[in-house]
Length: 426
Image (cartoon, rainbow, N blue to C red; front, side):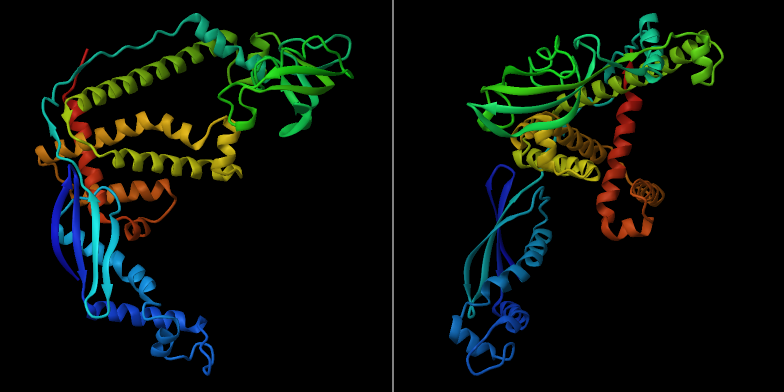
């Protein structure tokens, strides 16, 4: 492989021209032949025994070219990127320019590169810390959850359903007189007023009694996730099978003593107040950090390629996919249940992705300007932290995570501490 040229084709985008010699290409073609021949039949030869020349004569000289290029090109491109010294931020977009046995292969690879970053005045950032006071109402609201946790469910058959009741219903939805997919369920538990269903659905169950069968009319919202139902009127046939309501116990010393480690309601509320004040303090610290990072990004100047934001969005979607997988649902299922689409999710993640990418670039530049290094002890500690989070051995993590990337993460973490430690908190 030889890197013939490197040329900048636009801001933060360069093109590499890579030549794979005839000898290298021939070796790749031979490898592709040996891998594929077991599946190729040529008259007069047993399957897998036909000579390469006869196969090429039968199917064309270029029969193994695609497999050969697919096998050899990735490493050649990686080697060319390393030789170029470019700091790429996405997988190169490679195209074969020419290919022949005599001259080998010429590939042109377009590479998005890390932008130049300028930043100053990142020390001494001034921010205000605001700790929200914990009110008596906050404490009472939290304490009342103990009543909810100890509530009894009481069946109702002597009055109609009302808001706050928990109902059990069968339902079937119709649009233009035809039942639609996903609009039917039996023994569905629905708390009236929870907003679980579209607007108007729960309200129209109010006033009906156990055993009644009735219809309700609703209109799907314009932004509904199912295309054919967006903004559409629909009729649901309902059978109300059960009504229940929560009977809450009185919040007093007896309930507290029976349900918690405390003996009195006053002790319980005092502990709640302490806990809420700790949360308020942590929330204030988190808000301060966010303010510092926001101010830091505002001090950065860089032409960031959109592909860096797009890649982070894709990573976030991949992370979401892994989070919902243990629930036994796919990403598509999750979007359907939450009323989203892939495109709407990307729009939601776009702002956060931009913040994260810009902040990372700013911190990497600060680490460079401050000559921050990653010592062996810090790198080992980071490997162990990652290993613990994935329930793996540190050596196993080292096998899959290159040291250079981990070192950069350590340097960025130290840059974070430098910026935070120098900030002025008012």
